[in-house]
Amino acid sequence: MLAATHNFADLVEDLDVRGYALIRTAADFGALTAAAERFGAHVGSASMGARLLEAQDSPDWLPRHTEQLDDIEPLQYFALGCLESAVSGGATCLYDGRLAASALVDTHPELVKVQITYATPWRPTIATHPLIVFDRDHGPVLRYRSALETNTVDGPLPPGITEAQMYGLVEAAVSVAVAVVHRWRPGDLLIVNNRVMIHARQPFVGTRRMVRYRFDDPHFKTVIIGQ
Image (tube, rainbow, N blue to C red; front, side, top):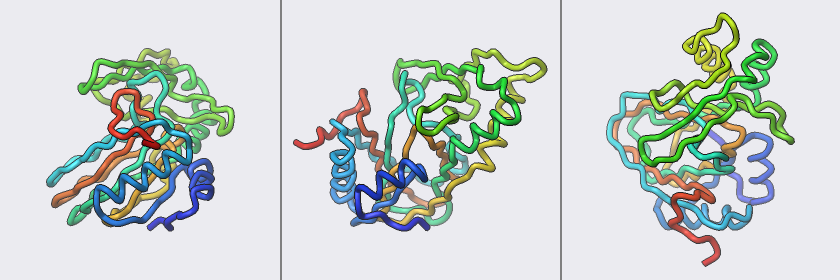
């Protein structure tokens, strides 16, 4: 279990260094949203989109991914708040995209040339990203979503490596870069640095009620911060 961070300066440092941070608050929509809005104000966000995510008995993993890859520039931050945790399972897994990218650069440097185009069934936006980006502060970072029909690998793939093998190499690098497996408690607000972390969700049994907050989401602005 993560230790909760209460000081926003420490929280932002955690987001830069560790890639994630936790706030504990009351397990209701208003309290979670207020905490998310305070964080957004601290980092200078103009708005955030809040969406209730409620599901029952999911036998499947949510694929590993960087949030909102169908945009030209993925979000800097998003957060997940827990209203009701599943009876079992449903943990959010965070993987350090810096560690995964560094491992791939060391073992398969030719993968830095790979470009993947991402789409989504939920809106018409589409964007192409390098598999590995080079960040001014963090060095090589993975920008990635597990193989889906809405992914298009534009290449160039290294000689002798198929698309399936490329995905296998990336998945293996992500697997050993696990940073935390967060098992939810009602009232948890987990904030993620989306520019450096990959996330996924375990299968679960029972009802799982969450709120997702995307900061400065150009498509979904349910809260104007500071108003």
